Image 1: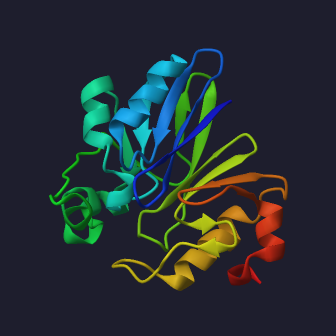
Image 2: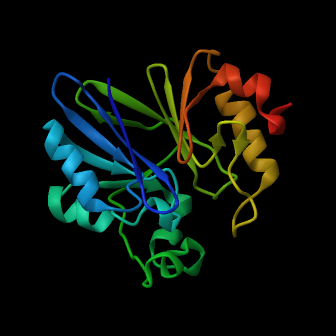
Amino acid sequence: MILENIVVGSYMVNCYLTGDSDTKEIIIIDPGFNPEQIIDAIEGKGFTPVGIVLTHGHGDHIGAVEELIAKYEVPLYIHKFDDELIKGGASSFTKMMFGRDIILKADKFLSEGDIVTAGKMEYKVLHTPGHTPGGICLVCEDAIFSGDTLFRGSIGRTDFPGGSYDQIINSIKTKLLDYPDETKVYPGHNSSSTIGYEKKNNPFLR
């Protein structure tokens, strides 16, 4: 599996390029800022993007989408419950972050159990509300791309509009912690982790 992490913007967002190491087809997860940096990484590695997947609709995870779609003409995926966030609403914080409303249109709404493919690689969608109503994680092989649901030693904020502490804890405990301890966790910010590490060390999950 291809797995490249590009840290973008002042919010230090982890944008992931991941896909099939044979065909070099990839999906782009959470391109929040710096489209030129992301494009340079794609072109430098000879990757072929086949889609952009947003783990949720906050501005720091969507800021480079317009430029990447203009460049690669790929479909945009997000959970339907976060559709309002990418339509320019104040709750996405894009005006605060970029000085303008970013308005996007999803090509496909994702739901629990859906599969996004890149070559032979399959990314299973887990609906994990709590940070936002339509927050998702993606699971492929021994990796979970957890967006702003689960961080190393922490969890996503729940004080934004649509957030819920009870929901995010339930999402993590019922959707993520059932995976084997060695499963790697690649979050939307900060460093990677494993499910086993979070079970033992995350104070929110004890």
